[in-house]
Length: 375
Ligand code: OSB
Ligand code: MG
Image 1 (cartoon, rainbow, N blue to C red):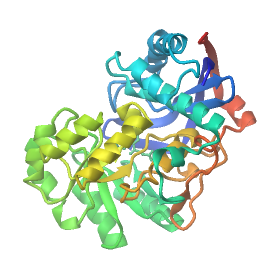
Image 2 (tube, rainbow, N blue to C red; image 1 turned 180 degrees about the vertical axis):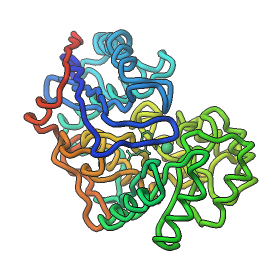
Image 3 (tube, protein in one colour; image 1 turned 90 degrees about the vertical axis):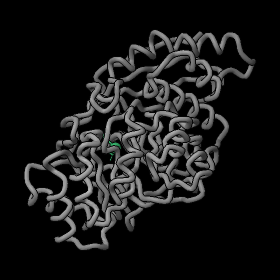
Image 4 (cartoon, rainbow, N blue to C red; image 1 turned 180 degrees about the horizontal axis):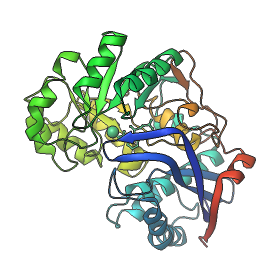
């Protein structure tokens, strides 16, 4: 793909309800979108960095700065020095590799380039990645609430809508009681899991073992991002399977965590590992080790969601993901909405990520745009 440039666009997307986790409360996403404009096609990437560095070290203003100052010039240099055919996702990945960290910034640009290349070739992302399903089971991530009755109302609504798996956000002081209440009200058949977003320490093992009787699918990231050994120790003290999210920053990190016995399940988020190429490698490492994976989410708009839903259609994704319908997040999505049908979400079938923003809606939510020429 011969690239003309990158457009960086910021959009303001209010959530339908505040989303509280152990690290903070999100009310509106300030999203950075990357549009890669090529000679034959254009492509989109959504940056999943949040407003503040509370989930991981990245934040959205920092990601935009990194793209402007380092990633875009590296891409331009690769395009100038490379093959006549121009750049592709692997060129982008290699050009970004010298810069430490910033996987969400890298993933946004790499995905935009990949989408443009695939659209130009008429190839769907699912075909490129090796998807084997045309729809994926949908789970939903339920935030920390002010009270257990409020939580039960929220969960009832999601189960009525057809969600096939419930994930409860937990933190010290909001763990055993909400889990017990959900089990008592909705029964043992509900697929139920919890996500602590690093809120505990190994010293909390006895408290976390109190979740054992509730037959949870998994507990996601109870300990700190860099505490892989602690997760391995915790795995020997509790019965609930441990799933890692924040700790799995690459395929190598996944291989290490599995070898150390720190997790038996992995949450895959392309933004966290630097893009869909690396996300595919994480999937492959886990599959080779018999470790189940599922698709995480970062409250994406339809653009990010399209690619995540496609990733979730790979063969190793054997658990329902945080691949919810558009209306779980936004009153009006920027793409045609993803909807729930029989608890599933359809994998887009068009070239590239298979969806595009609705121009009028995109224009209405846009707060700023800038253009970075690449030649
Ligand atoms: O830890 O999985 C997480 C949202 C933002 C940041 C981190 C996480 C989440 C979610 C929501 O749990 C997933 C989604 O529905 O997009
Ligand atoms: Mg998580």
